[in-house]
Image (cartoon, rainbow over all chains, first blue to last red; front, top):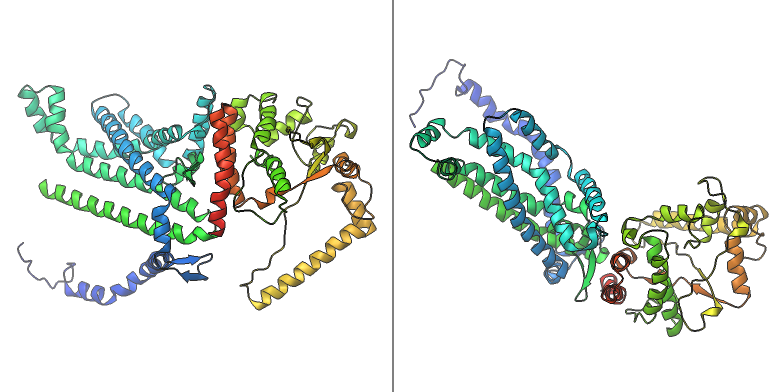
Amino acid sequence: MKKKKKTYDGTSVNCWLVRRPIQRWFPLFILPTFLCFLIGFVWPFLQGLYLSFCSFNTPTDAKWVNFDNYIKAFKDASFVHAFKNTAAFAVVSIVVINVIAFFIAYALTQKMRGANLFRTVFFMPNLIGGVVLGYIWSIIFDAILKGYSTYLTANATYGFWGLVILVAWQQIGYMMIIYIAGLQAVPGEIIESARIDGASGWQTLIHITIPNIMPSITICTFLTLTNSFKMFDQNLALTGGAPSVMMEGAKVNMTELLALNIYSTYNISRNYHGVAQAKAVIFFLLVAVLAIAQLTATRSKEVQQ
Amino acid sequence: MQRRGHLANIPLYYEYKDAGITVGAQPAEITGTYLDNFRNIWDLYITDTAANPTSLSSSTGDESEAEFGQGKAVFYQNGDWEFANLTGADKGFNLSPDDLAMIPIYCGVAGEEKAGLNCGTENCWAINAKASEENIKASEENIKASEDFLYWLVTSDEGTTMLAEQFSGIPFKGAKDSTNVFGADAAEYASAGNYTMFWAFNDTPNVDSWRATVVTALTAYSADPTDANWDQVKTAFVDGWAYEYGVVNG
């Protein structure tokens, strides 16, 4: 990059008259937010890390127990089950949400009447909170299943697919917006030249459109992946983990995902507060790895373009 | 959900009685000896219910109260505190006390013709040992004041009258006669030499969690009453107890 010539007229941001006060005083302006970050994030995080090695009832009354909590967490059948649930849920919801969102976006970027209205309508479920959605859908599912003499929490399968439908309904609109932005950025000339070369609509889609919106696909895939791993409110409100059954001498909530499992572990009894905390740390590491993978992947795509 | 869970006191009571366990001496494991009897009474509950067994998962206590209050149902499981609701005008039931009676829950246990009613309560006072000196002292004073109040409630003329009118008969000397027929029924069974089914349910380890598992299994059984589903109830009942005992004490 060519080095900019220094100007001293006081109108440029690069001018030292502007730069020096900023350099000198920026800590003052950062301070309020930084303090909030320390109090609301860093301190609880460190305390949580410490408490995951403790047996405690209240945070002020903690006793150091080394790795006991982590051992209990990994031995816990319900944690393993919740992990499997989460993985399965992530795979299914990534596919369902992205495929449907892409095709809705594709349809809505074609010339059609009322496309804007449809976009708004499809986006709207995203504006409703997860707990509200969960209760609404549990009523809907129970009303439907009642006709078949059964109910939502009768078995794990209903709960699982119920959650997939709920989350798809909520997130498709959001992913659709990202896909629409991507589709609109595909240069018209390429599409036009493809058409002149005699490519069919399907060929244009596979060989021109999709490669050109790879960045959107990457973003949406990772968003749905992290969303599925962090899923909590919808899970809590829809089934709350029910049904709970005894499996090989341990209690397992069949429709519980990881975040809800941490929450319910904390509420098992006072002996399990530390175990829940240990699970939360494991959960943090898992989500952190996913987030870093997401960053790396999106960055490498940006380089390609 | 609570009522369904509370019925579990019957098999628990008989098991406690056989083993000579008193409430408070919570065993680490139970055998579920009387679960077949529990199934008998549960089948009676779900086969002749006013609601469709398959819809029981979403039925509420208010619904069964209304069915009983409006004369659609003949039996209704509840306690003597329900008397005011049933005879009063608040909910529009207005039942006559003469038409009401409380009977023991029979489920095919030998000798149960001498059964009385389920009686028990589940409250206690506690002081946090780790509280500050000052708070402990204040708590002790509060408990002392509460004891004085309770003493007044069961001995003074005003207190016993209030209890008899608003609550039920109470097992104290000098208690006033109550119009609550349920309390009178309990006293009658007791004085006739019938055994009172004490509240063994109090000993349930991690009660909410244990009950949730048992009720889940019971709900599945109600929708589809097969032997396999009843085995799930047994597992939830017996294995669930051992598991929750470990959770609380381990």
